[in-house]
Image 1 (cartoon, rainbow, N blue to C red):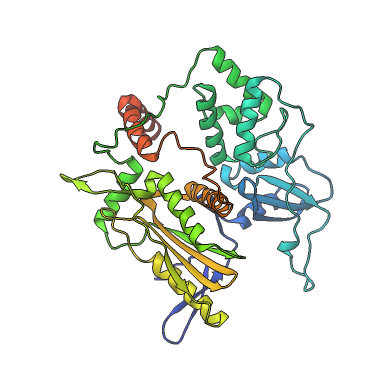
Image 2: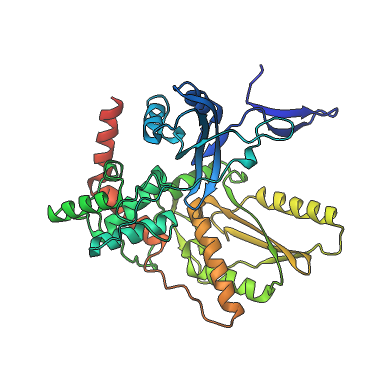
Length: 421
């Protein structure tokens, strides 16, 4: 059988398949596999568009699909998006469409993708938020979208927002404003002013946030796993030697590195987040969360600086591959491994590996930011600049079970049974 995967490989004489890249432009965006060529075909099918290219660009709000096209006359961007949305799922509609006079070409006459301009997000005439509620919501939008200023007329999606960021906006607004706020509110009222007005109306109607606040849990008692942790634990029981759910990567540092203070920052970060000190022993056949009093992590140290540059790179990659494929024991832990590699006097690599049961993508962004903040503080002989955490993931896992067992599980089950029936 021949499986056409879209991958381009070379079959060496000893029978090994070497991966060379993709035959197409397929990308993965927010968990979805996206074929930019399919979006380009839909654009080219629209009246007036002569050429089209779609690619993924990194922005302050994360990876975004950007569409570029040439046309004899300017087209209304919203009309084009509406036409695409009728043919494509939401995640395949470009966040922004840019009209060009001509596509940039390389000296050989081919499309030069790297010469395509960076997107400039639409910012309408600035109208400063006035009421306390508008200012509160504007602060949430600024933080989620990573923008310094947002006005009442600015549109969430025109600023680079997408469905994953929308869930963050809704969740934070629910908690900050104490309202029962459906996700569709942001899609129906995507301008900041209109969204704030909807929140005001919901507040006036007395529709308070129905989710109970997350409380502190007694650490001396056995604590159950969250549902996502329970899935991870079950899969580990099935395949304890599998590294499939290892998470991590490698960071490169240039400049003088104070190794002692860097390790102190890492240890402080692990002490700050209980989930990084949590193991999952089985008590009478039931997995529980157990938080260690100490980190249990010792940062390993390797010195490759004496080798040639090519050999250093080979050894660093070999180390990273080894760490990525070494399984964890969820019952005994620790579930974090760190190794610092010296490649030169002003070049170091941090190889970091965790199990997915204690981290995920959003959390790794927090990990990097806080590790940096702690290291900078320790270099200046200052205390940690990070405020104490009011709750930990362990508290959330108990809250999640209480919330679902209070009737939410049945409500959701009834909904999906009706939808899929």
